[in-house]
Image 1 (spheres, rainbow, N blue to C red):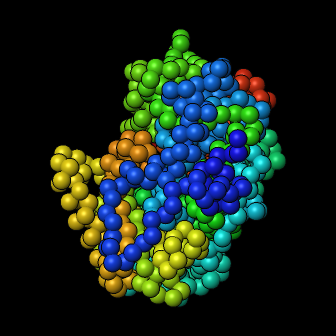
Image 2 (cartoon, rainbow, N blue to C red; image 1 turned 90 degrees about the horizontal axis):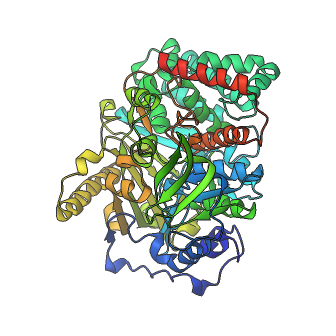
Image 3 (cartoon, one colour; image 1 turned 30 degrees about the vertical axis):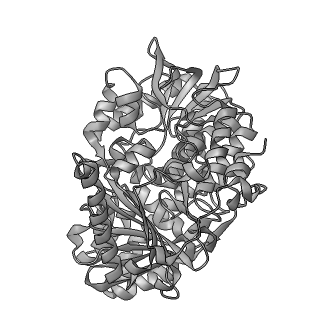
Length: 589
């Protein structure tokens, strides 16, 4: 049978195309019919890809089928988000036999896709790092290459266009010098401080980018890296407990400029600079210029499709419609998982790509381990998002419109408030094939807490979505695109409840957020857990949120698991000492 990409996602040009008749024909758009309003992702890829997805589920077993051999595997991965898929494919490339269990019909999680009436929407972010062909932080490129896959990408000439209070407009150019010149032109009296802050970011980034990135919980790797690159390792150790806001305040005094750095960090972590670890900020604020932002042809969903295909080609498996409800423990060790239909699978190790709240609140039916109690003391769930996916007439966008925008109109104090700031991506600026001719796609996101959406009747819930979405659209219409409301031909709104339901994320959260001012990344948990054989991967592990961060998490997790099951060299004595030291450091944080 052809790979999943050929059967499920032909427009990505990842594999030979399927006959057009095998896909649901796109409904022809008619401006006179007005916009269609659909409640979230409910009729997304499920409708257009149903036949192909069911075939995949039946071949792989899904919940009802099952192959002849249900284990033991070297590793079972719960969930097929980017972190889980990178961990799985890295292990498969090392020779491990891996089983990925995904409750949905396609892989990707919040990096998935769905189709509607000729439009192909990215479920989550369209700002893609990690696709460059140089350095060591091109983690998506590395992950794909490990399983023999490659994707065509389109370079974005900018990262984001900021539209901020006081009519402050800053375009983050792909070329670093152009960005710095633009920022200095807005704050000429802070030229020295700007250069010193971003130079510090580059010092950290260059140190990271010079290292072979593997598990920070594997001592032989750490010792080898330290002896090969002592200066770079000491640099990272120095900045590990520090936050971007503290570093910025060493060099910069202008409050408006410090607020701009808050907005820069908010895009990275959904918190301000004082709560953003300096290492996280540096990774993003520099890689956007070093490797650049590159959009995969056909949409972000192609990343997960390619990784899933590569996984299968390496002799491992991915099963869809496989809803894991329990991690099976024997004598305190994770040995397998149980699905909602009672089916069980067994492995040497279990890797959870669920959030830590879902892993230890739902999948592990044991008292919360002390380590997780400490994690929950230091971190709370970051807010979810209200998401609006729209198809609009192309004529509403002025010529030269940038692909990505961040809008905060009137008051810096609204930056972190629900619905205060708006993320906007227009991926059809780069890839027109995602929409019917003469149309564009708008992905709109704004932070929202699930508590604001609980306790509503179905009618109240749908009405609230419409009211909130229309207000966001009104703001965009006023700030950027006059006539936007009248240009809409398709509109779908997802609330935090949508994200919770379809992405299986606790309260729709997209990762942890520090309760107070953190000590950099010291308190962030790594991949190992206090339960033997159980690992976590994704945005509630070091180094945190974002596609590049969860890919890093996946690479680290695979290296640690490979060492634990004998596919990588390991020193038990050094191992025990290092894990003890890391846990002690987290108690200090």
